[in-house]
Length: 463
Image (cartoon, rainbow, N blue to C red; front, side, top):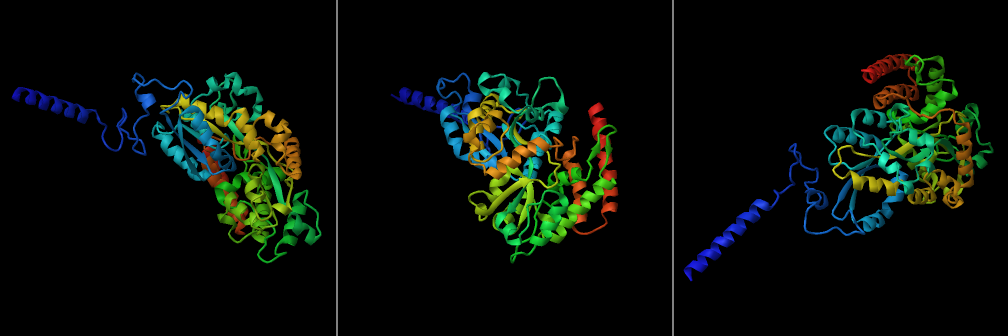
């Protein structure tokens, strides 16, 4: 009997030791480099135990996989979030969204992707902002396998939008992301206030200034015009004013900065006067979110911004929807661009699952759904389907179509790798102009700093 008890105790001790050595340490297992996931989680069972005894459900091949997806605060994000549960149910995977304002998003991506990016699976990114640098740094996975799938319908994607995910426009058939949103600058205006003032919708810059001055203070607390005035974010919407005066950011033939030319200085001065004399006192602190908050609650008579976010400015949930008016930007020098898309981290441990998420989120059916919700998409089929544009106000749809016809540029910011730094520099001139400072002096200083960035970027590309 004693021998049996001793044998049983030995067996229990052995099992106990086995259990202790088999359990992961609290807080997450380090990877090969000693890093621990931000949330302390363990690797996905489906990824870390391919030879396990449990067979995956054939109908839910990604059961056990958790994706970390980083998104921007954007109307597209708001539209797709309610549909996520359907995707999770269909695939078995769990998708964790993290949503940040665009500048914070860019900073976060640079930090995490720069340190390996193994805990980010997919993320929103901007072809004209981060994408070229991310491709150059090896942060983005090539998505040729996805584009080659017949049911993804690559040929349905607007070609110019997809080309934003090629490296420096290379015609090598390699793409590092998929476009989601296209946009043009339009004029949002309050029909009731224009009727009250007895004035026509402006069609050029002289008329815009005159209308803003007449509408300023037409009702208590109402400014004549609002627009982005916060340095870096203001650059994209200022760009159409720059183009309207005959200026540009760069002379591409010589790689020369051109933000201190007479044309550029006139554009800075005009935009600064418009916001200084007819805009809110807080203009230099206003991104699109703040502009939308003011306009949507009736605090401004006009605004120029991207058509893709019209819902935030004057959609059905706003106070101004019944009087919402839309027109082609009075600059008459607008752009037609791909503003946002989805990329996959080159170091994601779940690249196949991440590609399945991108396939769903940027696919034909989901694109038609988001376009129906008012998101200007990057697929021809969505624009050709009357059901997908039925919720667009007629004036807005007309302004978008006209904007595509008259677009003079395919970019709304300086086309260089270090675009964030360039926008910071150019934004200082916008701030000076709004504050009524010496625009020429500010432009001269900024031009010298911008030229140094262009020279460094060129050297990096050639080196």
